[in-house]
Length: 244
Ligand SMILES: [Mn+2]
Image (cartoon, rainbow, N blue to C red; front, side, top):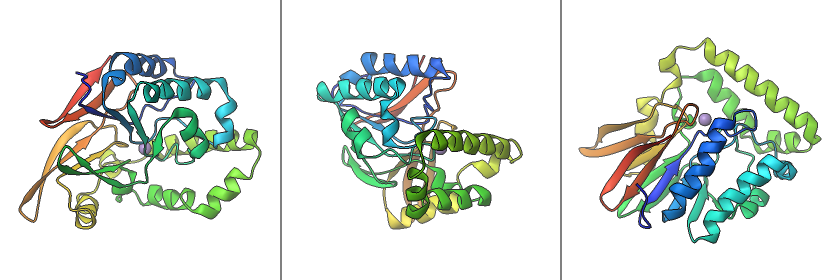
């Protein structure tokens, strides 16, 4: 499905030159689907890693930025809410890609429905080790020190952090890496919305919860490891669709 009145949401593509399939899928998705939409919102972990906007000089990153910019040129609004892999995406990349950066979380009005957009990792509060890591890398001082290092060093550190994360994940129970129901409820106290859209857990689904007698739907976006997928919303509601 794609029509000029739908808003599309994607996340967790983990784009890297080392994994050509999601890259090819995404470039096709731009032409076959996203070009015909009203907007495309990326909810984080679009890149496998982003070590700073100065890495935009790399051809791969240039190509991805150009692909996104082709949407802007056709009048498709593009938004980017960073995830735990690409939280260092900044204004230089945003300009090159013709997109608007969004803070995490962001509340929007989506066809009259108050909707909360988030990457989703902030809801995984059962994973103490991960939350400690998250606090560290989201600390402005840590980020400043990281960005002050030469690019090759940052790339090496990003690889080391990814390897450490993969190793840690292998030893964790799956339920620990899913969202915590209380964290969702707590977010809904701050943002009393009727719909949440997020990624991060790679567990695409539509969940329903009842908060103060009100039904809230929670959409979880798919990853793009084996095939792609997206959420398409319009005035009739949202649908999870696959793209292969
Ligand atoms: Mn993530």
